Length: 309
Ligand code: SF4
Image 1 (tube, rainbow, N blue to C red):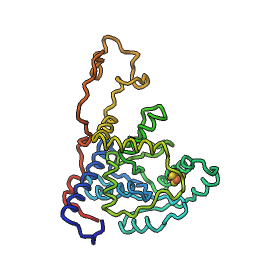
Image 2 (image 1 turned 180 degrees about the vertical axis):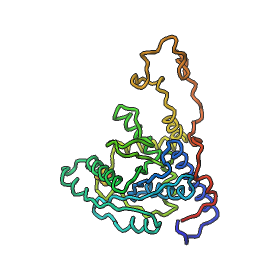
Image 3 (image 1 turned 45 degrees about the vertical axis):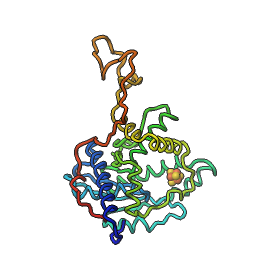
Image 4 (image 1 turned 90 degrees about the horizontal axis):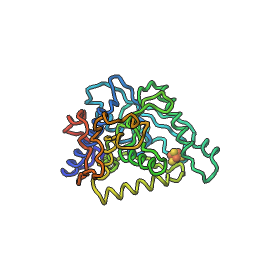
């Protein structure tokens, strides 16, 4: 939404409400997972897609009001994909007046050279990208790396792993990187993709298309995405409940003997997590359980009067 654009009262109200909600979601995730601490220098990975723009925007606004001091530095990796409009992000970041770094690395040519035509390029491409981002985080002295994955990405990953990988494993809100050197955070962990989409449209972020590499979208992820969207339409609240379930794991009622010590259970162990209810069916709530109320600390909450910038 540009400064000059005239907004009706209703539009302004809706925008403020949405912005406040996203800030609250991000503030809660930051608090629940201790994502940001005093003195952090956070490398915010900016791809030019809606999610990373929204993450940067919300982190900047929380930074202004947060009780802890931290720095943000936006980083974009220009992978030299044909037609990548390399002026858009520098212009946008200049307009925000924030510290940023554009890393130029022609991973596109490497991928094209190494992967035969028609084969999927994403795994090599993302491996190269990961390595470059880790190196950049070191170079700029970042203490954390922020990625723009949201709640729906996390759920999709969980289902992908269950359907195809035989694992109950999602995408963590905070974890150390696979090379053991960086703390990776996902501040949008509690944000719905639908909200980010609307926010991005209202803010008119200068989106860079994500199909410049010419790669086919991941078919399996696409199938899961559509399944979740369909559930969301037909059973409102189901997505929220499933995400809440990711935060309420009961290892004693699953079957992973590495996660829960079933072997030492004896008659003196007591009823663990409600115990076993034999032949009875578990009582399931008839209305979805929402995770919206998770967490207490809301740095964005104080921003009732919201500026559009
Ligand atoms: S979609 Fe394109 S840019 Fe993204 S990981 Fe795959 S090959 Fe790389």
